[in-house]
Image (cartoon, rainbow, N blue to C red; front, top):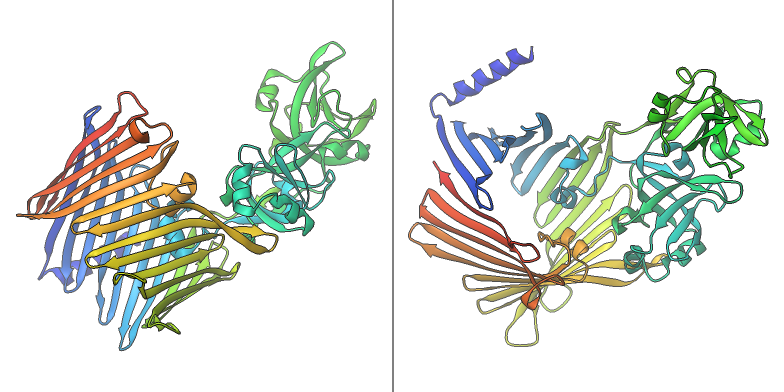
Length: 603
């Protein structure tokens, strides 16, 4: 049936365009010459205009291993309604990636746009999507008291900080301080980054006011041998982006656990009862001269609260290979006490009820996301409303309101402002741009803009003067002290300017990882400063582009220079361009990483 519909659709489209079918395209190819000759990348774009106002486009992307990506685009008019859409495929892995479609209607005072965007997984959700649609929403969130039922899963967990340990590392106690707590662990190697983000000794204020935090990571089982032995669920953090003090947005993970489920260190309190027990395999041990007769869960022979599985002939090799030391398992059996230690007797390891992982099943999201957007643009006001579906039903997500050209209360200034509200975080972000700002000297004007988004802050100053324009941007985050903003952490800055045909940019990164996330620059290890000089000029057949980029750092050579990149593009004709690009990394030997040439041909 689908084949018939596709054939009818194709016949209809061809009938519409039979009188005016035109083709065009573009072929781009990049060849790597050094250190080895190979095809680095390539693309082929084909366009067909098959009816008045309608266009179809195919984009094929090549890599060194052949065809990598295949995309299709379609646009046209249905009377006054403009329709366009695009679908993306991974040709190498033969899978669908994402798609979008827009319907735009022009009315006398503005435009109304309805759009749909679909992503097959979070891996296809890029930084530009996060900037436009907010953080990836299709995540599972659980309260801290359920964390022990999800060992081995990567989830968001929220709960109040009620205590901490601070020798050299930091260990936060969430929910409780006894054996039944949830823990967040930060090693001493990363702790300074968290203090930069949340303030000096932030854990003291968090514990004092029982601050609810949200953390993301793999839930692991952390064992203690003190107090008879016990273990707690724990997430280890190394990135500030994986903890938030502003809420945990997502969907609950449906939980289905067997009856009479206990933790391994509780087993000896259930003598004579048939229960499910979960915990880590710690060791195999001999007894009565028989090797591997005991399997110990939770602790070794010196841990009183351990659980032992007993098999008289000794556990065979295949069993020990499958259920190796360190694996987290779920077992079912009747508890007995032998010498004060909990024990389950195994009659046949081939039929004994033991499973890898948690005893509990979780109903997790499938990982795809559909966003519906309604955009009303009636200058100077623009309103955008987003609704989302993570395969559990459509819900309201975000509201964005923007106003352009609002007169400022003084000095003849004009203000552009934007406000973003979300269902989960309430106030998610605020942005402003102040135009026609006169500086106190030399006829210089400037544009001042800023963004406040969740826990980050950005400020940009763009001065203009007699043919010279520039931009100063500060990158930073907010520092939270208790429940208020206590300050700003400066992570770096950028200075750029245009002088005639030249563009100059300087970026200094006090925190290269953070600046990377806020710019289009990639810093290699130990790099922290970036300089770019670009030139655009005219020739007989089009524009000539030349770019030089330098990266400086602690591992550099002369003046700290670590890396250089070059790009040159010039036209041979109006339809044919050639280019060359190369990179040298002076921390390597030899320093030349690649030297490429290529071309772009339009037809």
